[in-house]
Length: 90
Image (cartoon, rainbow, N blue to C red; front, side, top):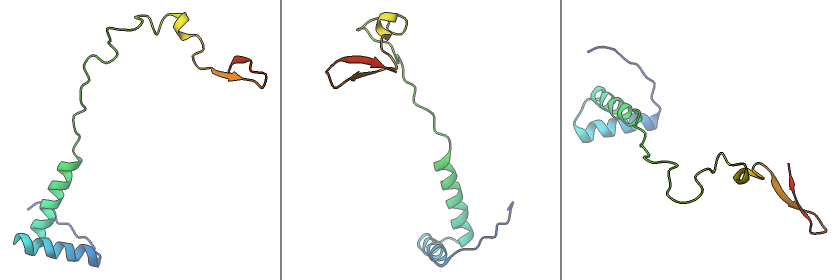
């Protein structure tokens, strides 16, 4: 074997270690090795899903991000005063 590890366990962790070892018929060292391997596998980097065709649609304006007409008021908020007059507010 490679490395030796020493750890302090509270009562709950020690009871869990004994229970797993008894249920599986393993030594405590084998339980710790298996749990470490299983925990590392769960934390391994998962591949990110590929999204094909993101931002590509067959409908709507094709120049949405470049035409100034479509960007009018972007980043502004439409406010209505007490008289009912509306205006763009920064």
